[in-house]
Amino acid sequence: MDIELIEIRDFLKIHHPFDLLPDEALEVLPKSIEVRYARRGTILFQPGEENGFLWVVRTGAVETLDPDGNLLARLSEGECFGVRAILRGVAVNRCEAIEDSLLYLLPVAEFNNLRDRYPQFAFFFAPMGAERLRSAQEHSHQNGHEDMGLVTTKVRDLLRRQGPVTIEPETTIQQAAQKMSKEGVSCLLVLKDDAIVGIVTDKDLRNRVVAKGFDIAKPLSDIMTANPICIDAEDYLFDAMLLMSQKNIRHLPVMDAGRAAGVITNTNIVQKQSTSMVYLVGDIYKRDTIEGLQDVVKQVPTMVMNLVNGGASAHNVGHVVSTVTDAIATRLIQMAEEELGQAPIPYTWIIMGSEARHEQTALSDQDNGIILDDSYEEALHGDYFRALAKFVCDGLNACGYVYCPGDVMATNDKWRQPLSVWKRYFAKWIDTPEPEALMLSSIFFDMRALHGTESLYDDLRKFVIDKSTGNRIFLSFMAGNALSHQPPLGFFKNFVLIRGGEHNHTFDLKHNGVVPIIDLARTYALDVGLSEINTEDRLKAAVERKVISQAGANDLLDALEFISITRLRHQAKQIQNGQKADNFMAPDDMSHFERNHLKDAFNVVKTMQSALASAYT
Image (cartoon, rainbow, N blue to C red):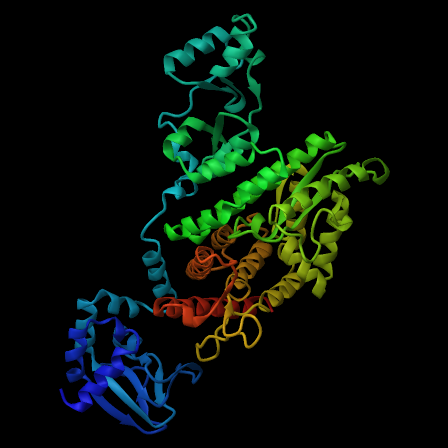
């Protein structure tokens, strides 16, 4: 091989994606390469022209411009262009040398041959941007983790195909027992006019009838559990497991589109999946001291690491981690009520932020508050709820969920108020969207009821949705606030890095990666009055309400997942190395695959932010 061909080979060998090719392919590749010199200002191809090459910049620089002359990209040493023109048959954009440039041209026939023979090479040139990112998602989640069955399996998947075994409340206890025996079931749903009014189990027959010598000729309604807790068929098994652990029940009725669909039992779940997550959450409700809860929480980082290394999606990891946090907080509230006694008036403990969205990935600071019934009187009830808030917030802090730096906690008198005061808060934030109001809105519009009288939360949620839906002035400010978080991608698709300080030469995958997508989804949700809180759920619901296109939502979902899973893998690696997990990642620590697809993801977000700006500001 002569010196010129050796130089071409050595150059390609160190630049992506040619570095993915085996040595034998690289040895013969230079013979197919055409070398072309282009002076500054040379038009390489224009819209409508056929392009017969994959172009590689050896030296110099090239710009790609759209038909209107808008700059799309600037390419420098080692970068490829002309792919879209090859895939589409003709060029759509104009490419021009902006410096004296030396270019390598790979004929389309050889380009296609390499794609056919080497999947890793073809993968890089898959449809660009969001479509390539979607392919990356599929590639990233090839292997599932055995612990994920509970958060990927829907409740409906465990239901009996023939539907629930039901009975009427007027039926005698003896007839009910005979039906349970005949059907071979451990419980019956009690229905009246197609509505669930109760449930009776074999345990009820044992404890309430046989043990007490109760008259078996009496109606079933005398011993049934009236108005039982239910779950929706579309919920996940992990939610069912958590609910059953919280309420200490073994049978959980399932609703589907408002109708009784069946019953799942703790035996069903154990048979479906016996996992570390089940035991972890179940263990939380057995603990009765702060120290005991601390022991459980210590296992969370390892659980996250195992899930990520096992191929779990970021969406599922967030759901699991948030559910564990829910269980910790709920157990602390239960412990507080055991110590302080029953609450004197109805209340709801609310949570905000990533936990409310089911998007936590690691231990974080706490954001919470209390909605009190409007019968609240400070002199009569203030001491109780101050003590409740202190017990729970101190307990969360002791377990690693540190105090909120902004003091958004139930211990702050401002966030422990009657329902009517909460409504005034939201009315002011929506009617007068000043900077502080917008900051608080970003926290409190991601709110979920955790414990207590949920009707208080439902009332507040309805008030907020009614007041914010279609409010163009407020939405304009929220959109502007959403655009304040920009992906770390420069004008020429290079990463924008932090300069100096502890996180020098890194970018923040949370505040500049995940948060911009969360902000976009929240704005869409507020526009059309969506009740969803989770970012993925919000984007899917926004499509149904036609506030965002299906393609746009899919692109954002793929970007969210790829950025989030990259962040989680970074944190899992830190945990394995005994380091504290953070959100700051250096490009030098990433593979070519991660760098290229993160750029795709960030570019998707920037595109959707531009669309948001056009629509709302």
